[in-house]
Length: 449
Ligand SMILES: Nc1ncnc2c1ncn2[C@@H]1O[C@H](COP(=O)(O)OP(=O)(O)OP(=O)(O)O)[C@@H](O)[C@H]1O
Ligand SMILES: C[C@@](O)(CCOP(=O)(O)O)CC(=O)O
View 1 (cartoon, protein in one colour):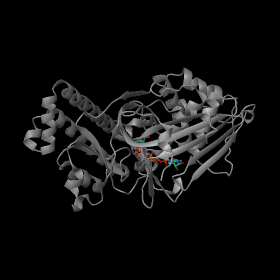
View 2 (spheres, rainbow, N blue to C red):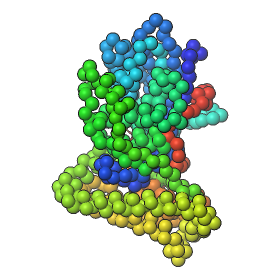
View 3 (cartoon, rainbow, N blue to C red):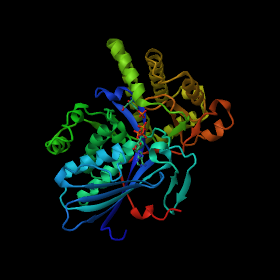
View 4 (tube, protein in one colour):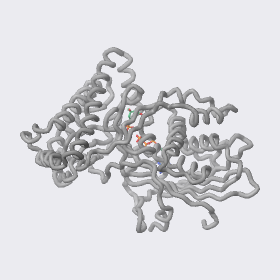
């Protein structure tokens, strides 16, 4: 290992889409995305292969049964991506293809990238925890495709951190705190992630992995779908134009939950398939577009009210911290009379009530389980707990998880312990992260025992 000349490390966070599920697929609507503390990490080591033009790449994900992908890439054949043993990982392949097509590097290199992923992304059943003084990761006996995921966006985290790692090897002195650098990472990661998924998602997960907690409005999908086939000679030129000279009209304004409030995720250990839910909702919308539009506009106006009220809470805290503390105390007491004195709280609760009401309506009409009755019961029970401001089923909804906004002081473990109505929930050890891609210290990823 000591023969490597350059060693760097980066990480990127997972996500929870609080407001804007389904609507965010359309650039007309904004969404509220919280980056979460489960991060995907990459340690990248590189070495110039003097007098050579080929690239030897090894990508290791040792936590998952020592998964490993090995590639040799050549400028002479357009950087064709062929894994030594024919192993597939579409997310890695699309990152490599787009990064090499964009940079078209000529000086041969040997590159080793080690991937590490935090516990939140996957079920930890039958895993073994290994640690050093800085970090801890769980090791599984199964390969990555066989370990159940939790829905925090592992592929978006992987694509974003891998893109960052490769950009850092081709671009000297990459500074991930610099806005232009983040924009470059974001564009390349969106292209790779879209192509690997084989469908056009809204890209909110890649945006949160790159920029952190944001209010997000997507780019038009045609920007990526209209790129030429990979085999076309002009792919590289078109990709460069898309990344360097095109206004994506995407917006990603940094946000954070007001101080004193935190994000709580509860795993319900089931899982839903986003693609199936999306296709049912699209079919429902298209069967009566004017009615669909009316419902979407209603959801949207409540999403906007909710986002605006969170900003109002933040302002209240800055301008009148003592008053704001009283508001948090009212939430901790969950006292209806006290709570009525705070219009900001009423506004948020009312908006979320409307949003959930509309999604239950879509659930009944479309057959897509966005807020199925069992989750309604669970969420309504959660809203009665002390310290809870509001709660939803994030993203596409379904049986994946629930998300609550709670006061810092609330103790949900204690309040829900041994209560049968909460038996299905495991409270996850996660919190909101402000920052997206982050530079890490490579020394922190050595000697795990
Ligand atoms: N630690 C990892 N090492 C290597 N590949 C990984 C890792 N984590 C995720 N991947 C890749 O991402 C794929 C999972 O992507 P998928 O989009 O299905 O899940 P997800 O992004 O976690 O889901 P969701 O979007 O619902 O949150 C894996 O099959 C694998 O190809
Ligand atoms: C339904 C959708 O709006 C959100 C999906 O979110 P999640 O993958 O369930 O977290 C799809 C998308 O935005 O790509």
